[in-house]
Length: 299
Image (cartoon, rainbow, N blue to C red; front, side, top):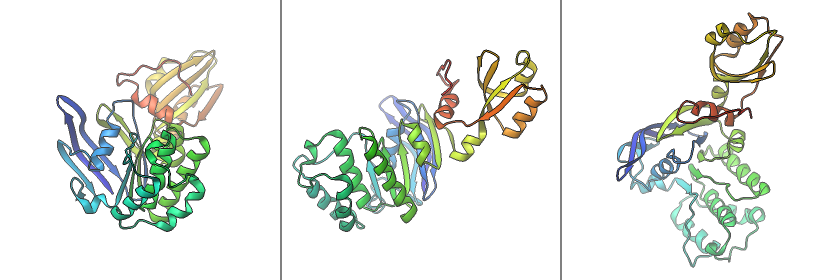
């Protein structure tokens, strides 16, 4: 389990994290989303023990992370800003990982050659960014970490390789109960792989839920009446967003689906459909009112 308790991180006068609270259950795939500058990379680096928090605690299975070699041996971190030793080939880097991670698997390293198809004698720094990302993931999963921290892990990969990377990650979760914390701007992909989601804004976590619970807390409603949508009904609903297309109203409403539809049905709608919300829509409407303006966005 990853526990972030009231963590603040400052760089000079800039506060990158502001009393952040975050919990990632063991064996979960947790998606961390937020606008640029929200603090996602900073918290990942703090959990990895690269940064030391200014205030608060970061715990892995109850142990503090910073300067704790035993805890770090159980983690692998793939940064969006990759670093490899200049003169090292893929094989040289694998040997370095093998000395660092006690559960390193050469058997898995050899078997994954068929997926990544990169000559292990090539210098990593001379590869393209996309190929370096493949190498980073290849090495990370061979280390067999208990915790996998990923910052934009599939950025720059082609669609086939993106699918392979996610498949490998989910296989580790299923077989080894690996805990995964992943930050990405690709909300469509996160929706397919995550079971928990946290939304960050200005160094804070503004929402943290299981994805199924998050979907169940807000709903997209398509509704039409003989006349206009009555203000009386609007007042009874917790409307996050409202769009009108001819006689059809599209509402994003927070609350229980059955209670929302029961209220609307009292006004004899001609059309009433409950539509699924995507993670991208949840992200957009949760950030509405927090300094972001969105117009005519129905995804």
